[in-house]
Image (tube, rainbow, N blue to C red):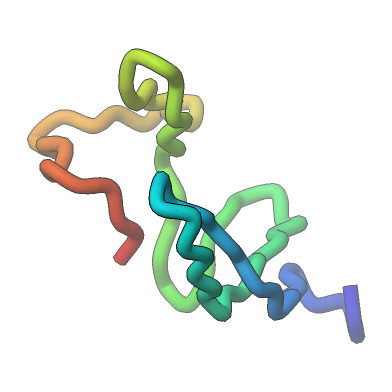
Length: 78
């Protein structure tokens, strides 16, 4: 972590090949957080979604819940 920063931003390229054999590339940034309480720019992470074969599974941080949240039709990150 540079200069004691609680995060590292690592630019990367994500490539996917579809069923037609067409490969697309997206520029992304991998954010690695190292603080005891995970947050970034005023946001606090309370849960994570893990894609499984049958759909998505949510895991909440201790003391957090997803009451009032509804899963979007398509996965995305705001």
